[in-house]
Length: 151
Image 1: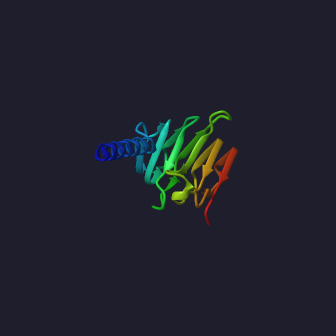
Image 2: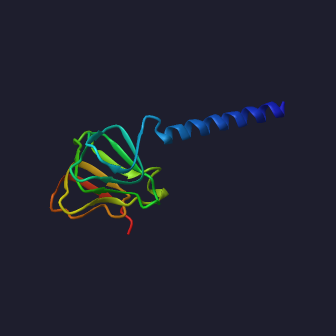
Image 3: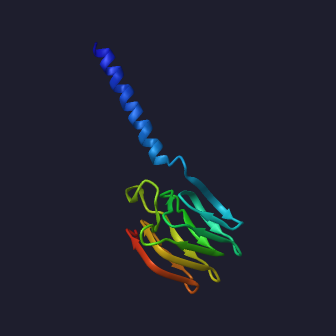
């Protein structure tokens, strides 16, 4: 009887771990890494597994309620050479965060290069080492919160 109970317990723990890892993995997420060379729109769950570079002449628009989760501890950042338009609304802000939460370590941040353009409306940036930085001459911000930056 003890062997049956032990097997049932092991099976239950295995199932719980599988369900927890599936939820963490965001099965409906879209994954990005490297150069973005064509204009696109992001919505839902976006996972960045390395640095993403928005090329000159390219626009990335991010829809309200989108969560951009960046792989921690790999120096991953969003480098903007083109246009990054992040338009959340008060009831559905856009969130940038470290995948797995800040406890797993910071991600790089959003870095604008000279001549780039950014619009940030109702945005939360969490656990980014650089926050929103670089040449901010072409960047407008309204309703932006940057929290949990690490030095």
